[in-house]
Length: 178
Length: 293
Image 1 (cartoon, rainbow over the protein chains, first blue to last red):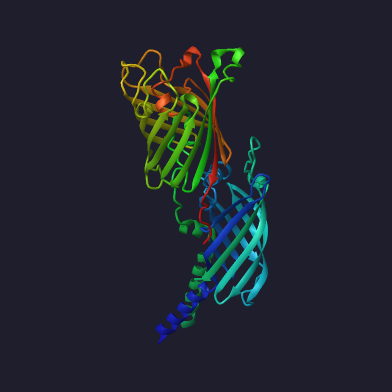
Image 2: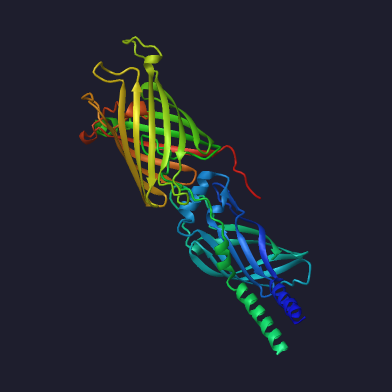
């Protein structure tokens, strides 16, 4: 009997501790740059994220080489010249999400505060987004601008320059409890 | 005692769960799937300078190439150091699959039409530990210059090239290439000359900035050569912008097809017979890559 009680409690403790951990199952990260010569868009579906619903701790991991461009030469150019993705293979975000309530279902406005690292440069950022919760799943969506110069990414000024100084990043992550 | 035990167990459970939530980023990093790591950008262009490089375009890409070789710099101020005289080659190259490219071109020098294919046999890659890239190149060229003094038929106008392009990108800046080549010309300029010729191409590039590189290329010919021809040598400078590659160079070769510049370069580089030239390529993505989930 004693053993059973202990086991039940133990299992209870464990399941409680994992009840509000979320892991991304699908994601889409895109960036869009509008410039006089040509618009550039790239999509990445390989980014991953973990989110602790209890503490609000959240982290994103974006492999840079997984951004897919419609033009393959552009992709090579972006990896080699802008992002130096051999040297800096990923972009990350680590921080805290506030303004959400897991007991409420539907769309909520949330704020992520933390450290964004791109191209080896870390900056403190605040990013607003939409948080949707329902039936064990969480959806997070956000659109925010990134100043290329903030992350020491050089825009070649000779010949042609075809990337805007500010690119628009859109993220969409779907999480499931685990 | 019982309560203490239960309390302790719960506490342990909480401690574990808290430590499990620590450092989500480290956890993501650990779980991250490896991304396919083929060595990209061994060279900037599909040409090293005169000859081909191991670069092939990805599936669905059409390259339009415009190449020029001006006259000899040592021809003096009267012809503006060779700029008055210009040869041009237009080329179109399409990548049917990532490994296979078909190309056609027309060179005004000797009025040569050429066609070729490139097939990538090996792709250098960090993950699969392939140390080199290997590309097979085969081409045919037809020289259509009118030569009334000779009895010409179509067969006599043809020349063929086969090359194994072997390269390695040693680091971000340095890439080297070897190109064992075989050329067969159906018609050679004298009975002293062999129709078949073996040659070895040597070349490389060194990146100066992320978008520019310095290139060098030399074709060594095996066997006895006629006196008035030289091995093709070229020094080049590449500028790449994401959709274009500009290649500027100085070379003793005037022809822009392998059957021309490998066996029949008539300029003596060190005697000042140098041609200024450039290759410009514009890339069009005809088939968009698939996107999204």
